[in-house]
Image (tube, rainbow over all chains, first blue to last red; front, side, top):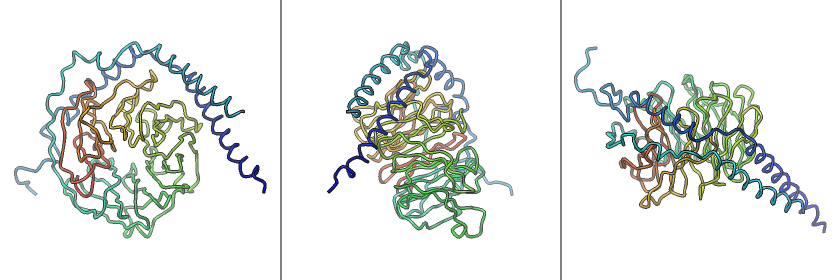
Length: 74
Length: 336
């Protein structure tokens, strides 16, 4: 029985997988990064500048899901 | 021998990567926000209950019209709802059970879905009998876990238990690009709101969240700080970050540009896995659904829980904030 032919494909797959993992990692390693002291204030700025429009943070009267209180004129 | 060499190189490079990431970690999100007013209360009420599914609801997706939504269940049903009136507009019986993935198309004319059949199929909602006009978009070699339309009705991105993601052309059913890199089942994906059609993030049972370049099919960033399966992933509204929810009972915020995890949302008393996450419109609130029947609402800038929402009879399996940010729908069994 030729065990080699059963074992080899798995090994080749495993090696191919590891090679891909290594090349992905190299790509990740070489990417350009920005300092957190720049990116974090910008993340926060997004929230603060959009808070007024956020109905779940600043509820408005204009809620399409709340029950209608008076009758509509059709 | 080659395997050992490769494994060794990988370990060395992971350490070097961590060092590089550490060099730019010169600010902390939570510390930077100490002077910001905390969220003291969250006035969220159950407004509508959408009853109609017999089995466990596995997935849901809002229409861009901010009023309709689609939900799919373990018993093979797909329902399209008018969330204002709670009326069911469509009911489609699928040929498969465990429909884990569904998505509303940008135009509102189609819904895509799939599950244990390993397939992603699309149904036209404007037809008299959508079920007769069903079309196959693509097939994986294991279950379909998630799907989303890519910027238009013509392309769908899928994630599967076979550990791959694939971008499909709807018309031809051809694979446009495939994404290999996860070492376990893919559970969730989300398309970038700012790099539309160019970047998406996926998460899975290998505890990792992968960021992908859609043109090249390559994984450009990988974050594996979770301690268990990652079940859900959503981009921050600006596109510069994303949040994950995991079986390790935590949610984590990853900053793409600084290439690091910048916040963890967890509490000693929160012991159960998180299955679903979404942000409020501004990104200030993080809604997270857990296996202990609760929806926890976190203040993203303080990493503190600000509310617990009950109202479900069983675990929250999926949730989504409506596109205009006015409501959240969370599904389990039948209630929203």
